[in-house]
Image 1 (spheres, rainbow, N blue to C red):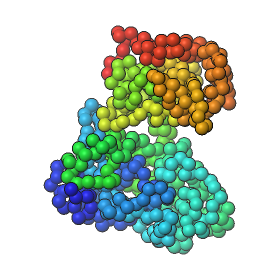
Image 2: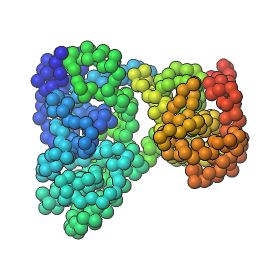
Image 3: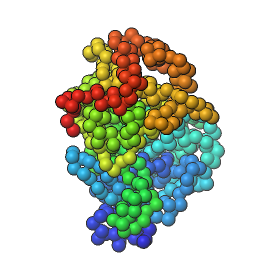
Image 4: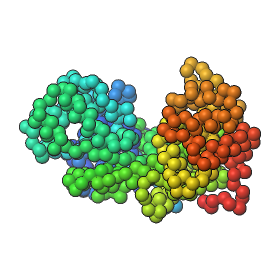
Length: 509
């Protein structure tokens, strides 16, 4: 079977199972510099630019910078930078299965071995946009010399590129860039911008460049949201390969839902014209609403459900949505407690609409999202995602929220270490050990020793170093969590979940 490559495209034009690019799409000028080769970028940002190119809107391709030593770009080279995005999922109750050969990437350059070629891109007058996804640790200030080949950090590389562009065009204000980081940290654009200025000062760059950096370039906060697992399991991969009629080492799976929210004005909208091609791209002066919805309803629901589901013997999110008790818990938690207590002014209609979309995503039969993976850094996630909701719930209603309380009790039980080996702590469920990948695991190892459920709950909830507030001051919350924790230890988590929902009050799905 042939491998995906440019020469194969004419043979695929009649294949009804895949959408292929037109020849002119492969000749479009390079308008975007992208730091990162990961599946999220391929499955969301690159796909959206490719979609706009198909509609004759953006008409630009992407130069990808491979910033790390991990992996290689061989597959990109051998496939002429083409890859297939397989979208699978449910949209408004309808099952979606589409395959698209994306041609937005023009070339992939290694920062380690091709830094001068990357700097040469700064001389391209048609370049307009810089996109990044270097993981959350990528946007960090480190001591860096931008004259190294290449600089060590992502901000250092970016600053070196911008300095090259400033010099290439003699500080022309029209040659500034729109910079859109997609790393999953709050205010990612503003944080990156502040690091760039600090690095510029540390590298003693001239005042004229600093003025150009500030006035002619735009670092936009952004939020991305799409589940992109990447390669499917082997059985699914073989099935798709037979359907497509070719092999693809870069074949990428994603869900249907997509969101790329970008903070910007009319100038940003005009430069990022690809937003016109898909309703999933939103450019507005303030994107905090989208961040709050995702952080609380999707991520917060995941966090309050993961321990409960895992300890109940449920492996994946998809399996949870097929279990009437766990599905009812998730739905009622999200729509009845989290949705009513988001610490941000959002209309009930927007909350309900987003919540129903999230439930559809959780039901996606094609996505294997494992609960044990969601438990990683459980405590930090609870602090960021759910404690603000809990506090707002008390402001609104003044009583302990039953679903949040049950989820919190399961969190405490999950983070009960029963042994420690090589600095890794393990819990135990269903006769097997599981790793507790939490920065606070050693703390829980100590507080669980010889503590009764009442003592454990009180000690943890009073820890203001964790929560920045004393959670025992919330009327009835400690008692409710303790009650559920005792029940879980006596009847088992599955038994508590089952008894939590009498048959006549289960949420209909």
